[in-house]
Length: 211
Image (cartoon, rainbow, N blue to C red):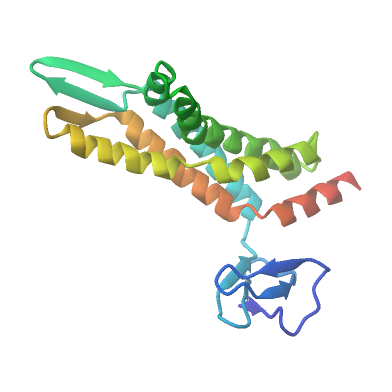
């Protein structure tokens, strides 16, 4: 089922199509309905069933995967009988010891800190709402969510790990550690948590809980 932003007057807010940049009035949709662009047919937004509940579940799952990704080895190297392994944060820490310390900070923030904080923000925002309460410092949390989301680049880090695995395999035996699967699980969980989280719906729920 779909809603037609073309024929219905919205609630004062607008949505911009990511495909053709056409501006639409925001039309509330019921759970299970979808609003499409009237020009190119691109999906604008969906009325997911139990969207906030799903977002919270995936965020908690992502935090669990994150714990696994940080305590288990990421890659295990074996060369001339010597074996060595590294953790998720080791790459960024090694950069911090060199003249490229700024790159180490960037790697740590984009691949570890930002994804973790983003999941934490989602949990802290959504949990009180589902319990019928408004979260404390809602404005701060929403600003943190908006600033952290573009910096959470775990999927880019996975590509870097794959490239390193291919390069190192030329002169050493390289084995994938448990942390890589944990990190991939965190990235997938984060994507799904963001997919189901509609900030506008969340804010409306917060306002309703305050009244």
